[in-house]
Amino acid sequence: MSNFKTNLQYLRAQRNMTQEQLAMLLGVSRQAISKWESEKAYPEMDKLLVICDLFDVTLDDLVIGDVARPRRNASPAQGHADESDDTGVPAAISERPPLSILQQNPAPLPQDITGYEAHMRSFDAKIPAGIFAIIFGVGAGMFFDADNSILGVSPLNDFLMFLCIVLGVIIGLMFLVPAGLGHSAFMRSHPYVEDFYTEHDHAEARRTLTAALIGGIGLILVGLALLIFSDEYLHVDDGWPVGVFLLLVACGVAAIVYGGMHFGRLNLAEYNKAAEREYREAKGLNDSYDMVNGAICGTIMMIATIVGLTMLFGFDGGPRGLFWLSWVIGGLLCGISSVVIEAVKTSRSRHDSDIIV
Image 1 (cartoon, rainbow, N blue to C red):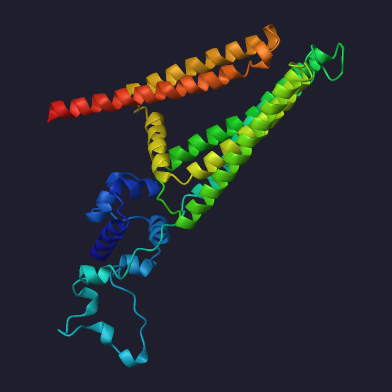
Image 2: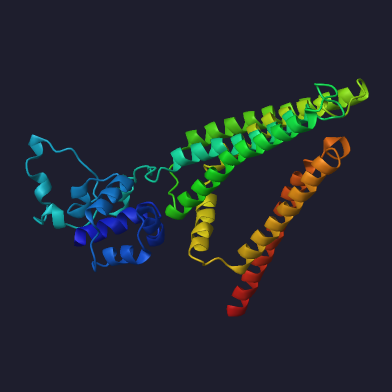
C-alpha cells in the first residue's frame, strides 16, 4: 500500500490539488483521502478506477508502480537493465528521480470526469431559450394591444394578448425551472471540478462571446431604431411597433446571455466557488450574509414583478409600453445589493482577521 500512498500524494502535487478538492471529485470525504494517504484505509475498486481516469495512469502503476518515474520503452537490448541500478538496488525500490527528471514527466492534461461540459452546454442552451420565450411571448402579445392591434378593433384582442403572454411565460418556465434545478443538483453532486479547458477552448469561447455581443446589441439597436421611426414618422407608439421591438430584444438578449454563459462556463474557479456555496446551503452551512443577500434579491424581484404586471394589465403597458423595465431595474438593484453585501462581508472578514492577529 505504501506505493499507492506515495503515488497518490505525488499525483495530487502535480496538479496542485488539495485533499478536499480530490475528495470532491471522487465523491468522498476529505477524511477518506487523508486515511488513504496515511495508510489507515484503502479505496474501493471503483474509486481506484476513477483515480486512474483522473490522472491518466494505469491501475498497476497506481497501486504497485512508481508514477513519478518517467516511462521508458523497454527493448531486448536493455535486457534486465530496469531491474536494478548501478548499485545493484532493484529499481522498483530505488529512490525516486530528482526534481529535474520529474519535470520531464509532466502531469497529463486534466480530464472531464464529472460530465461538466455536457451539463453546461445543456444549461447554456436552456436558460437563453427560457428568457427568449418569455420576452417573445410578451412581444407577440403586443401585436394585439387594443390601442393598435393588427386585428383592428376586435373583442379577441385582450384574450389573444393575454394568451400570448401566458404561453410565453409557461414555455419559458418550462426551460428555466428544470435547468435551474438541474444545475443546483449538479453543483451539489460535484462541488469541485478540475479545470480541464485548453487555451483553444478559451479562444473559441471569446470568439463566440464577441459575436453574441455584437449580434445581440445590434438587434436591440435595430429594434430601438424601428420604435423611434414608428413614433416620429408613423405616429404609432403602441401595439405592433412595441411588438417588433420586443421580438428583436428577445433575440438580442438570448444571444447575449448565451454568449456570456458559453464564455463563463470556462471559469471553473468561479463555478467551484458557487458550487461550494450551493453545497454549504444544502448542508445548512451558509453564513448570514448569503441568506440576507438572497432575501433582499428575492424581495426586489418580487416587487419588480408586481410593478411590471400592474403596469402591463392595469395601465396598458405603462408609458410607451415600457413595463418590462421593472425587471431590468430589479436585476440591476439585485446586482448592486450583491456587490455591497459582498464588500461588507469581505471588510468584516479582514477586520476579524486583524483582531485575531
